[in-house]
Image: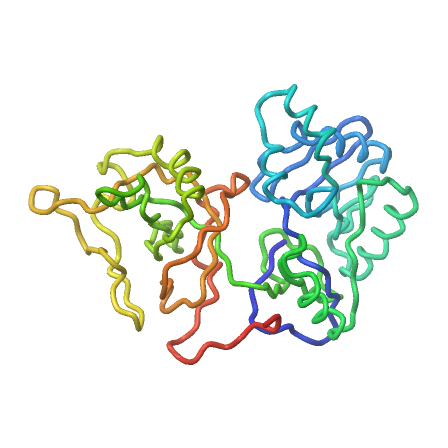
Length: 342
């Protein structure tokens, strides 16, 4: 179940929760069998053996939970990303050194009872009874309130402390996978974008800027802007991921060019409607569109970042084709409206 990005905290018959900065996860436990799945169905259980053990203890009768995997200690998304390692011995070591926790915020089923059609408020109450009754240390229930003022204080107090916004959930909503029936307010606007290519500048580091794309309703990868101005350390990290994925232009989503971009700021720098390799020099380097990165942006005009986006981190838990234009907080060319957190 998904959320629509809004620019001010909504009010009404709602439950407010912190928006955790981790890996979204559905946890299925059925006796000894435990399966953890990312939003895009990537298996996560092998990376978090401590959570598998706790979920077995939590619900021997079987349970399906929606929640977030976070770092159990101080908020640290980078440490959480390091947990996704192919080596079994490294996984075991990291489980001891940087253990994770599962923060549950919805209950979809318990035992043979399917709860998805019940109102969120009822599912939430049953979730609290289940988790708090069993007292499993690294499976927790997210805090919640129905007071909008408290939610606004969360936005201000917890910024950058493992929470990147606030969720607002209608009390009567059933569980609808894939439907944006919830709301989210974030400290800064972010989007998970596909890296379609990069630019490199003579005499400088390998990667000067990343070319970012999002998929439209027709399944086409649209060029939405660039991410640039990396620190020296970040340059090296990005190059390590991007350079090995360099590919030929033939067969690339932007083989025939990418959109001209048409916001109030004019064209995207270097954009062209069509490439003709026999007639012009390619001023960017195509890469396989398999990498997803999270970027922060300040404004969007007609589905384009008005200014260069700011690289935040890689998102190995996201599938490229899930990165669509509907993530963007699109506004008309008019004075910006400030988020409630500002």
